[in-house]
Image (cartoon, rainbow, N blue to C red; front, side):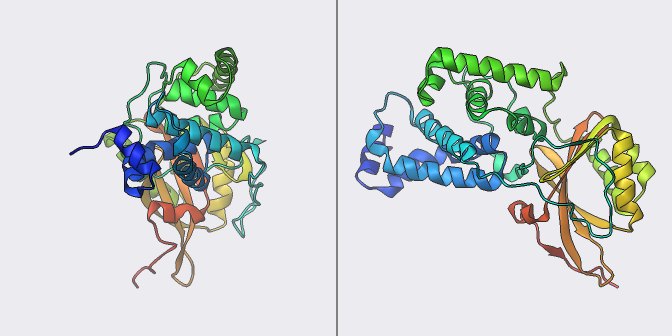
Amino acid sequence: MELTTADLVARARAGDGEAFRELTEPHRRELHVHCYRMLGSLQDAEDALQDTLLAAWQGLGGFEGRASVRTWLYRIATNRCLNALRSARRRPARAWDMPGTEPPDPTRHAEVLWLEPLPDALLAGAIDAPLGPEARYEQTEAVSLAFVTALQTLPPRQLAVLVLRDVLGFHAAEVAEMLDTTVAAADSALKRARATLKLRNAGEPARPPAPVGPSERALARSFVRAYESGDLDALLALLTDDVLVSMPPIPLTYEGREAAGRLFAAIFDSGRRVDLVPTRANGQPAFAAYLRTSTGRRPAAGLFVLTVRGPWISAFTRFEERLLPSFGLPPTLPAHPT
C-alpha cells in the first residue's frame, strides 16, 4: 500500500529513516541546485544540502503541514544558504598559477572571486521540477555561469527573494513566510534585485544556453584544434568582439577580443600546451585541460567552460583543476604512447 505524505511524516517523526528518505529524496537534486545558485560553489552547496537534510530530520516535529514538504524544505535550504553567505567564510583571491607565463594587465578585476561550475550530470531531474506561476527565467538560463555569477553580486536577502520568486515561481506570501519577513519587504528586495540585474545586463536580452546541436559541436571542435595547437589567430576568430575571459578565484578579467588575445598570446608564447577532454558544466560546453610535459606525464591544469552565442564564444571561464573529480575526470592522463 502506498503511504500518504501524512503517513510518511508520522513514521519519520517516530524515527523511521526510510520514511524520511521517501519524503525528501524526490526534492534532493533540485534543492542541491537551489543551494548552488545561491552560493555559487558546488562544495558549499553540498554542505548546505547536508545541513538542510539534517535540520529537516531534527525539525520534523515543527512541520505543521500548512505548506508542502517541498516548500518547507526550500525554506530550510534558503535559510541555511543565507547563513553561509553571511558567515564571511568566503575564500580569498588566489595568485596567478601558470609558472613561466606572465599575465598581461587585466582590463579589470573580477567582481566575483569565488565561483565554481556545476556538472551537467547533477542537473538531470533537477531543472525539470514544476515551477510556480511567478517564474520568469528558463531553468537552463538560471543555471548558466553568467546568471549564477550575477546572482553572487546581490546582497543575500535580495538574492534569496529573486531566486525564490523569479526562478522557482513561489508566491510573494510564500517567500515572505520562508524568510520571516513581510510581503512588502520581500517585494522591495525583489524590485532592487531585478533593477541590479537589469543594469548589469545593460538591456541585453537573457540568453539561456542553447541546446547541444551541430553548430555547438562544430564550434567545440574548432576550439579544441585552435587551443591544443596554440593557434592564436584561429582561436581569436572564434571569439565575439566583447568576449569575457575570467579565471575565478584568480581576480583577473579580460574584456574584448584584443585583451583576450594578449592573455592567450602570453600563454601560447610560453610554450604551454594542453590536451582537452570534453565535458559539460552549467548547460555549457566545457573541457578539462591536461598539461603536456617533457616527461610525457599529463597532469590536470584546469577546467574551461565556454559560453556560446550563435557560432561564437562569448565567454571563456577557467577554473581550478581541483574541481575535476566532481566531473568524474582523473587528476592525470596516461602518457602519450611513443
